[in-house]
Length: 497
Image 1 (cartoon, rainbow, N blue to C red):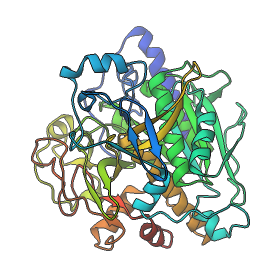
Image 2: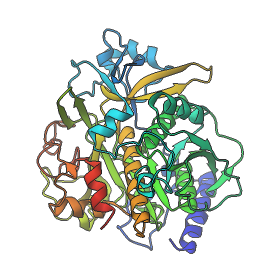
Image 3: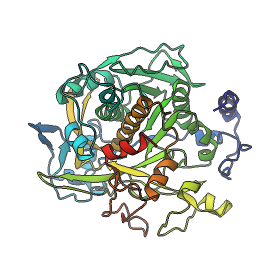
Image 4: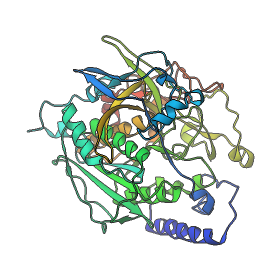
């Protein structure tokens, strides 16, 4: 993106915030897609909307039984506990409030399981991990994401991010990561070294998309989100550089700053495991997802059939969720009942979705009322998300208690898809090709061309609501998009195109 656009974005944000002190009217009319004359931010009341993490966590602790999938120590009635954003701090209240909770598992009566990185890598066909890290070939290093950067965007502070990643790596035999300090004066990062090992950095963004020395306040829900995102991005791309960008709070204004920090540091892959209610800011913020060399991915949401920003952006890959069941000699996958996905209220349908055959295509909301055009639909792709078919995450509380849990949600697939893109970019770099960059159009073209057989597994069962378009089916569907990755075949295709 040209520097003058970046400067205009920041200047307009500052002016909008100052205007909030003296009032101001919200603009009820969404900007047309691609309308460069529209204001680039919404009214002050909208940019103070708060983002919400998109993870689910099973009640009780998770424990592994040797190399096999783990189990979860649940209590009677826990199958009805609301698992969205669950922490130890709110567990007792959630258990006491079971009659008002909403069960989001496809099959709540089935026994919950929790998977290891090795199981997930095998289930989705990721390249095999080498027995050791000594004397790896350039191809082996590329298959682990070496030389690439994954940005994890979040809010508030997660004080145990680095220590918990080290615990995760030790338990599952993953490469360790070296902590790399990034000075607050940093604007851009040097390219990651393909010959180096994994590094992890945690920075704190503040106003004007700059870095702050002091960390933001601790928040238990966001701390859990960081743990999930970092550990599973690393499990997918174990030699990639990870940069965690922690916003001062969860307002859209602060999340904007954090994303802009990634854009200035880039190129890389941006993982956004959070949702915000759509409003007229959606199109005005679209330029932040159009920086060269960057790929953006966002969780579709975890409350069933609804569209959420930033996953509704036409420039962002929207990641939905499935329920993955692995047996001794079997594998099944269905749409997860909690996955987001629906029709955007503010983004017009992009050209890459023009040919989609969609049931229930009537759209209501500002976009339909003002523009009378079809809307952007999501999701684009999917990944395991049901917390009852969850994945191990370790988390240490501020008091020092370290526990293992079973996590799910569309937060689970977002950093793993980011890791897959990082590995693809590493392979492309090895072949002298540019990073993938904007990905939604490429994914839809790949799947729509019919060349995705064996590359994306079509999810044909399950639903995320009672509407006519809430059903998974053959080909594209709104709950799971084009399906889940078969990573080996996908890498072979996108690394060379």
